[in-house]
Length: 489
Image (cartoon, rainbow, N blue to C red; front, top):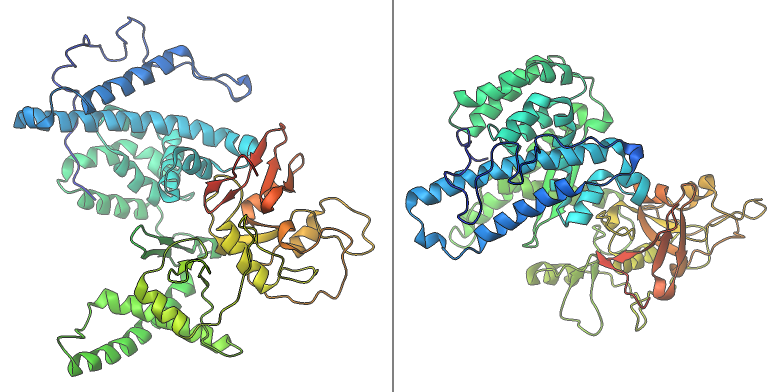
């Protein structure tokens, strides 16, 4: 976290080609302090006034970014003034963004119109990381209930990160207290020079408003593993109740084991195998826990870890994940040294040739093929990875004797939700869609539900691409590995 700046002020002077504007009044003389409200059912869009203001802001920012006078021609004082002024502008824009995002979220319009949550729509439309979109939505929800915080952000007294800290510490049990002490939380920023010190005080204060907390719930546990740009992965988790203590104990036990092994290696070759730091040992311990857990349930030859890597026949020297990410050479060499190879055949259009028998559930090979082909949920704009998808029967699988030939939610919930099990026999026969690759699509649980809503339809097009038809008649092409369906498909 960065240290907060003092209350911010506008730049000392406006750009030379524009006259100064009074607060709340545009240079055309009109009052723009408050925008007119627009009810959800009105279907109205931002008026010319708002659009003109936004264009003016963008033009000014671009002018500053590409102005004739470069930063090297501005004095030290001038640079510092500009840095403060830009932060003031950023905070005002953050407040405006939160107001718009909060209204979108309250109307649930993105779900109704596009089948996406506000978070997913924001990430896809603005090309943002999912985590950043989630932060924006969470802050927007809080600011709708806390007008004092919103005003402080608009005026630049606090920043987006201040609101984010408060939002992360707010829950259904203490939200009323947060609303009641908004001004106190704002005033506390003047008492600390360091952002982290202010944040720690806020967390302590909000815990006082929720001393006992709620009884731990399964839903309070969270874990996210996100791939970073350098090929590493970042693990973030929140564990409550018994899960927290079990994981903590397991990490302690296995960390001791890993430390003993590494310490022995370091004693033999201290310069070549130095002992890593504590957090690295805990990370290695987590990997060892996973290997032991997989080995306990493993059946058959080879190593226990079932990790899928992809090697294309035309480029056998490159190893990739099923999401298309190139694996570093060291990991690739270790992985293929004792690997079981499963051929997945694709035609010249990149379409996976049918692997399984005509059966109810997708086989392990079909799931492997779908991961390589789709790279995650195929609904356009969704960022759910393959590990969080179901194999959906586009033309629904219907048991023999069923009177329904269309989408049947009970049938699909049984025949589609098979992300991890390896069912190779059915015990029944189908009168509906086949369990073949051109009839199987990777969908996350949310969008799996969307395609079963009244008015939604899905069909397979050429080369195992898919099309979605919304209740309003809009046709959306599917995606593969985050890339849109080509126009020729």
